[in-house]
Length: 93
Image 1 (tube, rainbow, N blue to C red):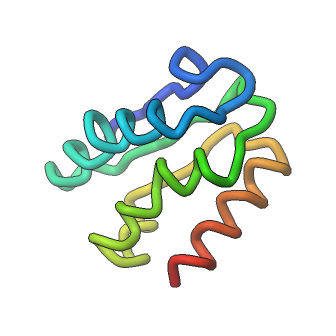
Image 2: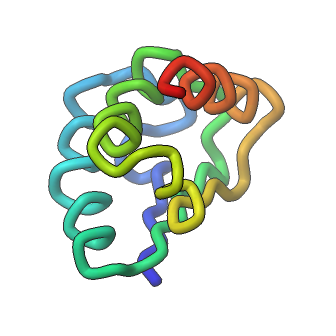
């Protein structure tokens, strides 16, 4: 299991798509390729843009299908972030 703390990468407002892409390429995808469960921990992150979340997970969903959500978990999400994640996941289906 790999838990990725997002706060040190993004601060309290996750908006930088380049950082999201780097997290996806350097941390999320390698862990998933090793058949690990990945926990994206949003503790301390108050909000995020839809483009950040899209850059973070859309390619993962596109390449692995929505079944990957069994191994991609979200922790410590504010209601706003939870809603944005839902929108992105729904859009990718």
